[in-house]
Every structure is written in C-alpha cells, then in structure tokens.
Image (tube, rainbow, N blue to C red):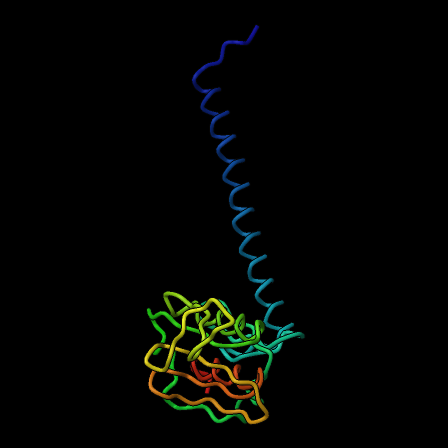
Length: 182
C-alpha cells in the first residue's frame, strides 16, 4: 500500500522533478549551441572560406549562394580567362523556362543544377532541327542555352540565346558570371 501523501510532500516532489527537467533542458541547450559553434569553426578552418567567396574543398570549387552552394570544376581565376558577355545575370532566367542544347550529359547536369534555382523549368532541347532525337526544336527567340564544344572559350548572347563555346571552364565562367562572381 502507498503511504498517504500530504500536499506539502507532493508539492516538494513536483518542484524537484521540475528542477531536474529544467537543468536537463539547459544542458541540452548549451551543449547544442556549443556543438554548432565548434562545427562552424571547424568548417571555416578546414575549407579556408573567407566571407562569401568561392573556395576549394579538395575536389571542386564551392560557390556560396543563398545559404547553400554550387559545385563547379574550375577556379574563379581560370574562369576569368574566358570572355563572357556582360548582360548575363540570374535575372535573365528568373521564372522562365530555359532550354538546354548540349550533347554532353555532364555539361547539362552542371547547368541544370544551377539554373533550376532560378528558372521555373529547365528542359533539354535541340537548337534548330533535330531528326534523331525526340526533343523540342528551339531557336534564339526562345530562352536557349547552347553549348558547343571547341578549342576557343567564349560566352556570348544572341537574342534570347546564350552560346557557350569551349569546355567546362567556359560553362563555369558562364555560371560564375550568372551568380555575380565576375
């Protein structure tokens, strides 16, 4: 049988439980705050980030944007060697459907990963006519990004088209410009 408890005894037990729970919650709060602060310090020192500048994480270049970041293959210095049209900004693609014409899946994936943040839709398409693929045929009156492989590197516009000539460095130069790092 249980012993009869007085109101004073019950009140003392309730206060003791409340004190234990409060101390436990404060320890969790302080521990999580300290852990988060330590993780931030560790991230900055290991990656060498300075503010919002792109940084190398050991395998690729991370371009900070909107609380996250995009992975690019080329350094900002290497991308600066590519001639890029001045009128390329993210506003050009904001809320629009963007069509990609590229024979390289790697190039398409790199472009799509960044463009999908701004555009309502990113879709593969053919520039001009295409008989061997089941893709929509688009021209420079549409919002087309056309990648042409080649030795020369350049990024320029023609009506609503953005033409990227060259390799992944030219693609990264276009993305650096679009994200405001050039």
